[in-house]
Image 1 (cartoon, rainbow, N blue to C red):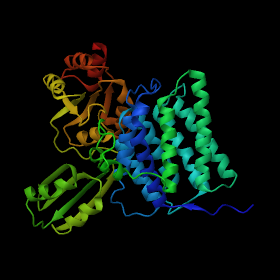
Image 2 (spheres, rainbow, N blue to C red):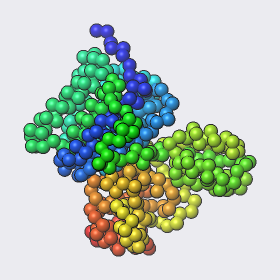
Image 3 (tube, rainbow, N blue to C red):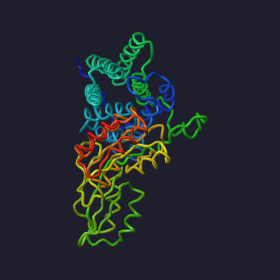
Amino acid sequence: MTGNREVITGNDFKRMIAGAYSAFLLEYENINALNADSLMDEKAGTHILRTIGAAAMSLRDLQADSIGGVSKRVGSAAVLGAHGNAGVLISQILRGIAKGLAGKYDASSSVFGKSFQYGILYAQRAVNDEVERPLIITAKAVAKGAYNAVRANLPIAEILTEAIKAGGIALSQAEKKNGFVDAGAKALMVFLQGCRAGLDGNYVSPVLLFSSGFKKSHDVPNPKFDIVYTYAVSFSLVKCRASISDLEKMLNPLGKVIVVKSLDDRITVYLHTDCPGLVVGQAVDWGQIEDIKIQNLAIPHDLKNVDKTIMDIAILAVADDEKTAQSLEQLGAIAVITQDKVSGPAVGDLINLIHGDIAKNYIILSNNKSSSLVMAQAKRLLKNNIEILYTNNVEEQIKALKAFDVNETLKVNLQNMHEAI
């Protein structure tokens, strides 16, 4: 049998992500209304919408044509932009797909089908449950459908169609068994259907959806708030012609966590950005550049060198509003307030804050179970610098903070705080 020589390109993948985002803009509230007990996430639809929003926004100015480059940018942005437990699982699927497409300029139907296997594997690792969640069960059915379609030598669009068909059967069987539609499993199907529509170009552009003023009675998350800063860029400037204050002004529109220091005969620069090439391109005009380093914050990494931290242990407490934040800060915490209290913090919000070199070690106090995987994902990315104390509400956060002793070690404090709640 002659092999199928059809390929999928980076531009095809861009359309798929745009299609998935468009689909969630239309369906996220319906998913919010479904049973999400398996995810412990009451706003699964909103959380996935914002996660895919981060992925879509990462492509807004991307010039790369290779599917490997596009999928990596998408996967990294989704990992850092993940909101809630549901968003983390979708981000891991996208990260796994990127793993399967790594280094490819374009991908054959066989390679594209296999990339779904990586996606499911990464999602399973994220939850590491003894009992499989409906989303994972449905994802396995999707992967099997894609595998059979690849073996049957079908075109890529039909591979997606068969994968969706297999997932739909699994979703229907789960509904009959449980008596309800699981939000996570349904969200996966919406994601795949959006990808399929995007591949065909048969979808409404998200730009048009926003400009048309759809759902005016609802609070649709603004995608500009979901832009993530995937790369840490550092370099030295020799014979710099700009002052530190001017450098900070010029860098401010390009990223976050901006640190500019004068050291001997040079100036060192560090910042988080979504466009490292633009930063370096502008820096060429400021002085002679040396020691350029670019680090992907969406993969496990060490913190940058800590020159002078304020404290040994810092406690980051997630707060929904200013009033709650003030009460937590009075007890010594650093409050993490997000722009949308419904969605909670993204993984990238925590990464940016911790990279600010406030402390050598961190304890994160969650305020509900819907972001437990967000905390865990941040911990994985920053290796051994983070410990998580899962609390369910403000009252438990306060009890834990009152048990903290600045003179004790990290281990002793964790034990005392855990006992307090």
